[in-house]
Length: 227
Image (tube, rainbow, N blue to C red; front, side, top):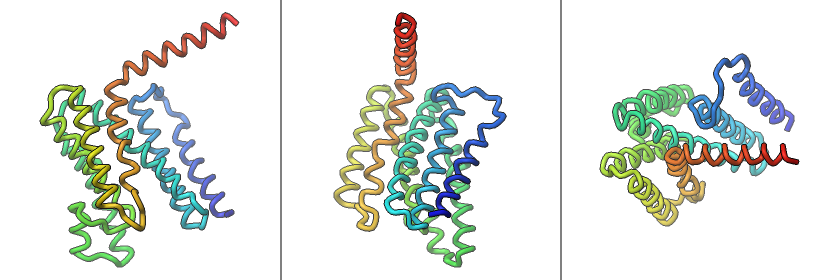
């Protein structure tokens, strides 16, 4: 437990140090804001899985919170980018920022651990079969990207896009739960199914939510002032 306590202190101290001497201002759900959330979610996953390795019972389920936050931010970021640039350079950005780093890390990891084989790496490279226990997430998020791209490409009406996106993820949830549940990690993908489209929905209604939060804040200020 002492090693886990030290790891906890080290991880979150390093995270907080990232905010020191930051000249940028953080506004609700801007790029800096969502990047900070993504960083927190990644560290939460590392922290929880490390705790599980150190025999801290049940802590691995906290990693699901980090995964959900990351997926929500990913869906949110894609929708915001789509509203600005449509689908221009969509796959190029995903390739350079997501796929290439993953392929590089996987290659180095497999070579270092002595588990590399051309077949294993090619299947992992093509997202057909994960070579590691965490590889499922890459297959999952690439499918999220694909669904998002197809929906935006085929449907032009924004409301219909949102309905089609949630409909597709609902069908995926049913198929995943009924036919593809992993007995070793039951419903690992299915329980994250609404996180990505929820992020898209958040981006679509961003300004409405901001106005509601602003009104609520003003009411609280006025109410406090009257009292």
